Image (tube, rainbow over all chains, first blue to last red; front, side, top):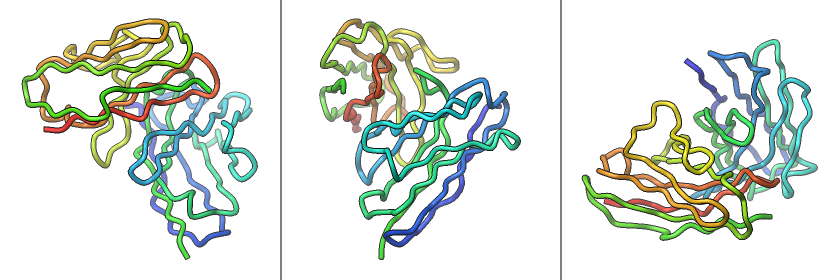
Length: 116
Length: 106
């Protein structure tokens, strides 16, 4: 069964960093790119960018450059999203999703709450 | 960025109904549109890819159509699990962009 399992909820103070993991199972990790998608409280879906799992090359959407970092550990079939210098507006649910143009498999989401 | 406009924003329906929702792209995207269902508190699920392709395991009551800038998703014989929010997404041009969603209410 192909699935993505994400790390648990995080509560962070403004200015801190957070690193979310997304671990794949049931398929060869490096066959598909990994996307990251944000959903603000009560909001819609926003594509943050993706990382090519065979090369490690990331692409960031506008608005997600600078403080956001995509990375991989292919030895454990895991993708990571790190957010530095957290702001209140970073509060939301972050999803990883497998695929290129089509997001076929999604992680369950990780809630990040930024509050002092 | 390519804007994706979904309509209606919400729709009141009942089990057994047939519904159609639409998505309009701000510029032509060929058939590079995908549709997702997101049930409350859950991750999105892929339903339709490249306008008309039914994803593995998705019931045949879901169907997609359209090309260019106008697209639609039809759900026949609504089931209880279909009361959710539906998003279209264009994957023609970076950055991929989603519509704002159509919520189906009982």
